[in-house]
Length: 247
Image (cartoon, helix red, strand yellow):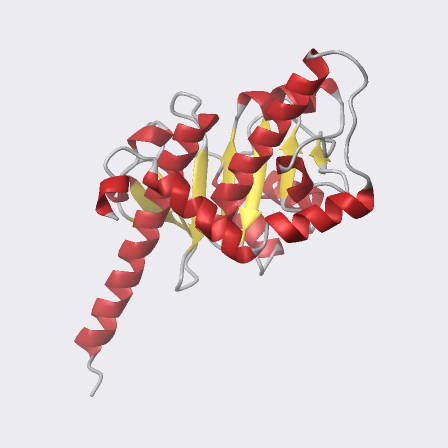
């Protein structure tokens, strides 16, 4: 027999799992070079539809524990947990409103992605990592390089993202999405790696080469299927201090 207490316990377990996953995502992103002092954030859709679970403002990605992850509603107001909400929560809430398939959003300021987007160059499939994203071209948001402080601007970011996996916020950062927090995190990590590899290619001189469309799409299917992305997430978590020993 299912009691109200049993249902409440399941709900608490679910919330605890979401908070743990967002905290892991934050630390994975920091370890992968996405840290920018106290800025940048990852979020997961609330299982009960109340908003997003996102890290509290004022902390670096590397400092995030489950207690520093809180629930924020679609207007950026704190619903559950402690701490000051990030001012750019609208990025997360508006992307999820526009994309029912998206269960998690990452917004960070990774250096190579910011640099490549600022040059005006398209991301090219010069490496395995880039094949996850192109073709078609990674979309670019150029309406403003300022913070995304309103729901209207959040909706504009969501419109620019469209059905893509990631978006360049030119002169600002990136947005990466996934069906869950693991996929969104791996997507963000791979986008930064792809941008770094392209910058290295350009710096080496000569005439860069990249995969043709057919090859790029084939590589995407071979390399970035669901099981592979899950394995990458597991690897990234194992690399975190103290996490590898748990296995």
